[in-house]
Amino acid sequence: MPSAARPGFSDKMRAHLELLDPVTWISCFPCLAGGVMVSGAMKPTLHDYFLLFAIFLMFGPLGTGFSQSVNDYFDLELDRVNEPTRPIPSGRLTEKEGLLNSIVVLLLAIASGIFISLEIGGLRGMVILVSILSALVVAYIYSAPPLKLKKNILTSAPAVGFSYGFVTFISANALFSDIRPEAIWLASLNFLMAVALIILNDFKSAAGDRKGGLKSLTVMIGARNTFLVSFLIVDLVFGVLAYLSYTWGFSVPLVLVLVGLLINIVLQVQILIDPKGGISFVNNAVNDGFGNAIGHSEVQEHNAFLRFQVINNILFLVSFLFVAGMVGVQYLEAAG
View 1 (cartoon, rainbow, N blue to C red):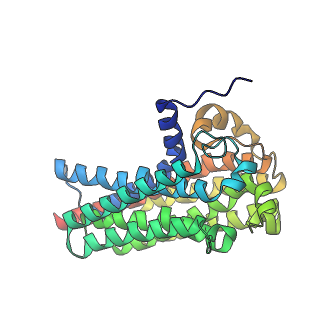
View 2 (view 1 turned 60 degrees about the horizontal axis):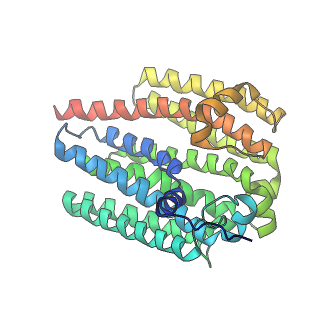
View 3 (view 1 turned 30 degrees about the vertical axis):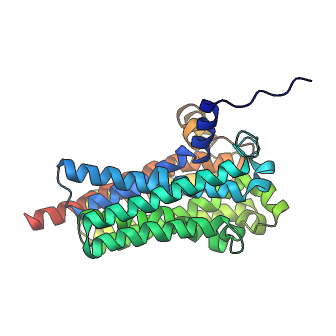
């Protein structure tokens, strides 16, 4: 029988890029944007735009890319069940090539952190360097034995929330100003929202988790209860954001947050009633408008989560970034 053709250079490059999972880079961009907005100190200069690009590169393609690459390397056996088309289990990359991919982006992320830290200097520069280094460490122990934080939802969800939602926001704030007190609050809410969503994202890998002995919430308490736990966290985030908007004197964002909370509760009730087919009216928006960005799934509960995620993310990001922007305007006006 004729042997299969060896992948060419361009095929290898595409596989390496896929290993970094570019879609996931997007998740940290709103956090970075919010942190910059809260600072109220970025200037429209080439220098500041370069710094903004540098931190987006550090946390996006490099930092997030490392987390995806190292996860695929250590999860090869699980991915043979859950995602057999990924670059390593499909044979498009060898295990050695996958490891090399992880090492290269790790070193580039560290180098970027050192460069930005030296450019900013002082305590702010140290905050940025410590943030990216801690995010990289968490990304490694999330997937690698012996700790392998992803084995239990009690450690996996906070790890993701910390790396994607908290340190990114704080670092972006430190890029242009001292850490604002409001930034701590908003970064914490970002952390909790990431935790809520990663809980639901585990639906897609429930079969492999059971086989591999991973304790995702879905495996431990079932789909409907997993939805309930996640929804309670989501609603808590919206409730605290509404309280903060009121406390900080932001009337328009307060209305946006409360409307978003109400819409979310309506959707959540429908999903809790029908965890597989809830809010199916959003199918077209997911499949046609966002399918390439957020993926597809054979697990119906995961499809319900994807439908909820589209609406929730829009509602949260609009109100969240509005609040962050108004905080920045207050500081800008105080400085002027």
